[in-house]
Length: 238
Image (cartoon, rainbow, N blue to C red; front, top):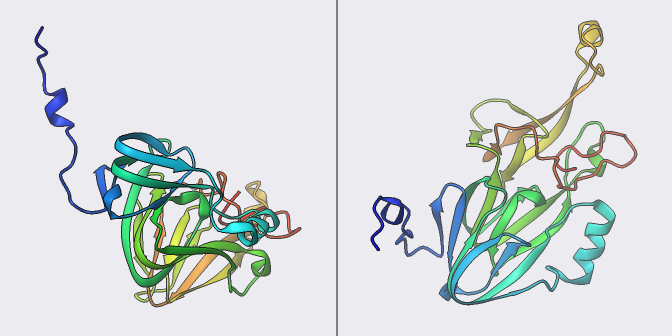
């Protein structure tokens, strides 16, 4: 029996030799011969070769306690072996970057995978303004590959070029050298008349570097940054 059509030629595997490569914008291909990787728990959709998965808790007891207290963190599995591993998360878009002795501040729920050579921790965000004292984010630091997910195609804003503000629920990450503050825009009487709360909380960025913003106010889904008893929940996570 013969099959006709372009299905099996249009969607063949990418031949990129990179450790992390986009099979397409929603599917990440990881070359396992470059070493172990941490991947978001449940993100494996396929693999070829001899790949093993271990949900042993990323970061040890100290980070587990931080995660329990702050609500932020990464739920990941260690992937080891040989072959090709394919990762995805609810058909979200995937963005790949390489850190060279550098760091990122990122919403934990947006982390898809990173090289085992990358260290991570839960850090309090040093920001001024209302409720800034209770904001937490995941920091990724070191040298290696990082893959994050976004809902839709994001924009990378250069914060040094102009004063930069973003909806907290659309901010995915920012690079080292960027400082973040909380801005409260009351909106005045008109905001109250329209049925709003009268307060709009925005993230204000400055310094040197970039902030990645996705075209969807959904970062709160399963993230974890908390703001204490303010009632806001989390500016970066749910």
